[in-house]
Image (cartoon, rainbow, N blue to C red):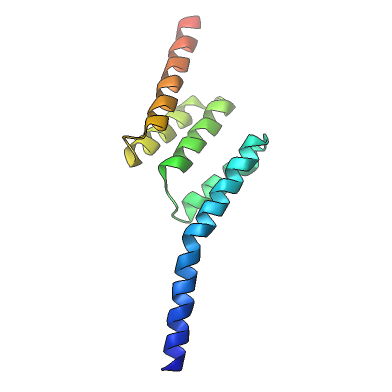
Length: 110
């Protein structure tokens, strides 16, 4: 019985730490991007996705990464994933609108 109680407490502790781990990793990746360390931030965002931490914010950040890298197809795909996860997010909608305007501007320049 004592072992079951210890196991239960351990499981609850691990589960309660999981969101914090994600938040910390996500915040750290964002700080890396702000410092211009985009490749490291990209690695951490992709790592979060591979762990199952799929959020609109991660896809938005990946879209920005791809847009900066000139990979516009991947950027658009990531924006669409983000909007599918959180269609009412005004920041996402604004980012995607700016992205589409940027693409149209590039097309008109050519």
